[in-house]
Structures are given as structure tokens and as C-alpha cells.
Image 1 (cartoon, protein in one colour):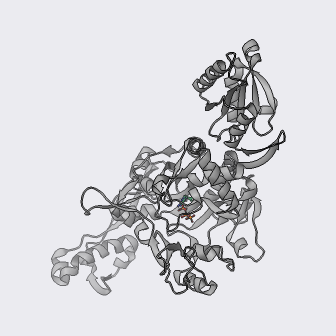
Image 2: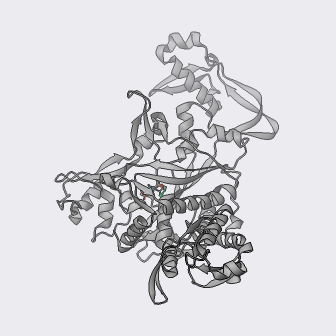
Length: 581
Ligand code: ATP
């Protein structure tokens, strides 16, 4: 791991952000537990996400199970395609991500080996002479194979009903789409969001919480009518976004291009207006939660890298320890998932859109004469009927002549039109079924937590003493205020403990600390990112005021007790700046 990674992992464990789970049992790779600071930070990131992507956008949020039966993942194609490239060392038996070994090799200029076919990755392993990171044996002769990342389980006793832990929260939204469509009164566009656990049996989990086997996703599935609905682009059109497009990635001297959302759309750098909208909206949101915009970019997927369902995809990436890491995937999923679930269930995975007024349309129908088709075509008669029905719908002119020809299993059959019962009926329709397109921003909450920690980490000097501080936004910080008595005597400790409880009752996250010198107590809070500290001193007892100290500037000011809770809430929510007090 990088120096940054080592520093953060040490801090995270020592100060209760996160640690490897069950270390007493030796730990299990890819599983981490969030401690008190980490769980609070993660909650705050989720709350900020909900505020932005659910509440302010007017979407609905649901909560689906994490296990679903096999047919769901057959339909979604995860059983077949949700794989990573595996190479196994014949010497020590250790498994590795083949694409990562290629990308990480010092001679390699390949940035995205995942986009290459397995054989090409195997060739690159041989060409670079890649060795097993565990035992050093050569991997040149080993095959690169697909490994499915889903965790399998049995639903109920026995093995007759296999199920899988969901690899993304999204399928829980798609499988019940008919519910959400009804709830939204069949009015497009609408969005369904979910924050919850996802599971992937990663081949080689690494970089602490960045690549784990159980993690939290925050996903939004926005269902839109591609012909009618447009995003409110004007809300974000002036936001400048750093884009690393396919053409920039392929150019020899290509780098990130900074442009406004409007320019990116007008110049065709981003094809989908909806994706452009979400990139603009999200850029502001990442800034809000403390992602350093100097270490951030949007990278477009190369064509070989696109998921089985996506036509355009951009990843928000953060620079962490010298590597670019995907924080969020923004994809156009088209109708892929709803098509597949409709096909597998036979249910209507669409919205019924009512016309303003009923319309009369001509509908070609067939009513084949089975007393003719049965004896004439035997076992093929049923398939011929199906084919006649579908032909009538897609090409009614084919029934213009004396006979009509249908293909069944590669055989051509000529049928007299009079035996097909072909007719064109006039029907009145009150609306139509529309299968919406899906726009998906998919955030990994753990990677955001890690990025906020890494990007807010600072070391500086205060009063000749070194300090570590997490300069994260007050809204996101696990604790908003540290309350200290100047000394634990003369009633100061008692008053400070009372004040801590009053502030908690007022809805603030408070920590109380009376141990050690006041400077040490400040350092302790700086190190976990607490933006404000309040000190109860003798003046507090006499004049009902306290000192409020700001983490980043270390400046202090006095605030009256009667206004303290209100002031701290304003500082946390960004309604007032410390300098204005
Ligand atoms: P990667 O290429 O890094 O494996 P991905 O492209 O498979 O990621 P997506 O399927 O787009 O990821 O998932 C959406 C988000 O979920 C990612 O942007 C990431 O933040 C998060 N995520 C995916 N896999 C993991 C993991 N193993 N550990 C932690 N977070 C993850």
C-alpha cells in the first residue's frame, strides 16, 4: 500500500474509523468493520447523498432484500457475465486479478486491461514476465480465466432453490419495477434510489476499504422516456467538469479537459444529456462532501470496458495514493434490464401512458384455421401460428397475395392466406405501454468515505507542535463539537458535562473530553476531523459565554450560551461562516 494508504489505515484503526473484521481470528480479506467514527462518517455521507439524490431531486427511496433467487440473475445476465479475470499461481495456489497484474507492472503502459480479451492479457503477462506477487513464481504459462464474482447460497434447506447475494443494489429496484411504476402513477420520468449492501467475491481484495467483498452502494435508477423527457440541464450547465474522454485517453498527449456541462454536450464529448446532468450535479456534491477537486476527474469507459448493459458510461475517479480509483459509475442502461425481466417473467415491465384522447388505430390480426394447419403441418402447426401472429403485427402487407410464407426452425412454409383468418380490425386505444430508459449513477459509499479521509488529511504545525488534522466539511465530520472544561475543578467539569448533554439534546454530535492538557484535547479532535471545540472556563460560570475554536484556522471566539446550539448548527450546516461570528 502507498504511504498515504499506510498512514490512513493506521489512523483509521487507532481512532475508530475502520478495521479489518475479526482480527482476533486472523481477519478475513475483504471484510471491514466501521468503528464509531467511521460509522458516523459513513452515515453522514449517506445522509448527504440522500439529501442530494433523493430529497432534492424528488425521487423515491426503497429498501430491498440482499438475497435474490437464481432466475433474477439469469435474467440480468450476472450469472453469465459478472466475471473478473483470474490467474492462479501453479506454485503456491494463490489467485490474482490478471488485469491488475498487467496494469501494475512497471513496463506496462496499459491503463485498462479489463477492456482486453483474456488471451491478450495472458500474452501480456508472458511478455512482461509477470511473477506471482505472493511467491515470485512465473505466471507466463498460466491461463487467464473468467471468475464469477457472485456469492452463491441456498434459499431454505436443500439445494433446490439457489440464490445469490446481490452484486449491486440495482436489481432489487428493477425486479419490482411494476410496483414503482404504479406508485408513480405511470408518470415518467421518476427515480428510485436505494442505499444498501452489495457483495462481490473479489479475487484479490486490496487497499483496505477500497476493494472489499461486502460494501455499501448508493444507487439511483432514473426511469425516463427517451423521446419525451429531458434533464433540467440549465441547473448545471455552467458547472466546469474535468473530463477524460475516450479520445483524450487514446491521444498520445491526452489529458483531462476542463469544460462546462453545456460545452461538453454541445461539443458531443458527452453523448447523453442525462449523464451530462448527473456529472454536473455530482461534481458539486463531491465538493460538498470534501473530495479534493485537484484529485478528481470523470473518465469515459473505453468500448471494451462497457458493462453488458451500458451504451455510455463515465466513472468519477479520485486519486488515492497515486492511483486513480473509481468512486462512482454513471451509466446509460437503456431498456436492457427491464427487457430481460419482462422476457423472463412474462410481466409488463413498462409504464402505461394514457393519451389525452383515445385514438382509433388499425390492428392486423390472424385467426388461423387449425383444421387445416394441424393435418397439414403436424407438430409445427403451433409455431406456425405464433409466426403468423408476429408477421401480421410487423408486416401486414405480407398477407396481400394468395399465400403467405413463414419461417419456422429454418423451414419455409407457404400457407394460403384464406386459412390464416387475416383481418384488419379498427380498435380504440386509450394509451400505450412505454418501456423507459434507465440512467444510473452508482456510488460506492466506502470508497467515498476513504476518499474524504485521504483528501482531507493534513499535517501542519500549531504553536510549535505538529498536528494531524482531517479538514473535512463540518456537515460530514463524525463529531461536530468537542466540549471541554478548562480544568476538571471548581464546577467547570460539571458545567461542561451539562453543556455536552444540552448540545446533544439540541441535535448535535458531541464528544466530551476532560483528560490531559487543553492543547492535547484539541489535537485529539483535530485528528478525527471535529470542526469545532467549546471550552467551559471561569468566564462561563460568571458571564454565561464559552470559547468556540475552529479546527482549520485554530481561531477562537466567545459565544453566549443562549446562542451556542443555534450557532453550532448554523456552522455545521454552512448557514454561517466562523469568520462571521
Ligand atoms: P471496479 O472496476 O473498481 O471493480 P466496478 O466498475 O465493478 O468497480 P460498479 O459495478 O460500477 O464498479 O459499482 C459501482 C460502485 O460500487 C463503484 O463505483 C465503487 O464505488 C463501488 N464498488 C464496486 N466494487 C467494489 C468493491 N469491491 N469494494 C468497494 N466498493 C466497490
